[in-house]
Image (cartoon, rainbow, N blue to C red; front, side, top):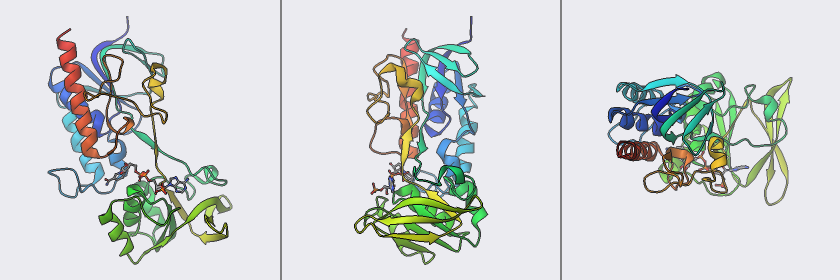
Length: 304
Ligand code: NAP
């Protein structure tokens, strides 16, 4: 007989950590799994300015205090790679271990989308980076290119200006997707220049190290090369929902469909945070989901 617990939470980002606070504080025997450092995307975010009650906090600091709080009510935190969740709430790890539980909250978040252009994959870690907070300091005094016009691209471009000589932001339309106040900061930053209506076609390298990027004008199809030492693609995210693939609870993009209790159509299986089908992906909405899911799971388990 394998391990049996009340609640398994998969993913220790803000949604999973909030679920852990609510679940374990309510007295549920809870295991929280992650296959990386706790904090999820928080640890890749240099500054959070819109989490209520906390003025301008470093993502790593917020992650650490959420993690300490989440594990202070008796939950166990384990490094582990969950590979499947079945309809009976059995959670399988890549070690082959199967843990049976009364409820599962999947809070696995999203992963950065690749540009999928020639030269990209072989230069990841050699000039192509998906984390300005992790790698920005390596580009001190250098010229870098950021691809994308969403919140991530613009916020991380602003962060990069602390180190680099210049940031060139490349967007495929002539408008940004990011919030207006971030756009204003970007437009007013003299280290940042913006190239509109261009898409990346190829990452160029010299001896395996990024040396530039080939861009194409979406209207004229003319090409130009931007010489740079770093490329930061921020072209969106895809859900990490593979562990629920067999349960028919995903939409056509792979996001998990949940009700207002954050429960899927499979009783006792919940999803919380960015992995859910939703409009607003924020730290505050992720923690909101985690709390709702854990509280509902608690009621379901204790009324059994
Ligand atoms: P996003 O909002 O989906 O933006 C992706 C950007 O990449 C868009 O500008 C998009 O262009 C562009 N793009 C997509 N595919 C491309 C391609 N193949 N070539 C060139 N450009 C491409 O992604 P995100 O910035 O990662 O944000 C994800 C979610 O997290 C959003 O809901 C966002 O609001 C949220 N978020 C919030 C904050 C915050 O509130 N502070 C911070 C970070 C993220 P188009 O606009 O032309 O489609």
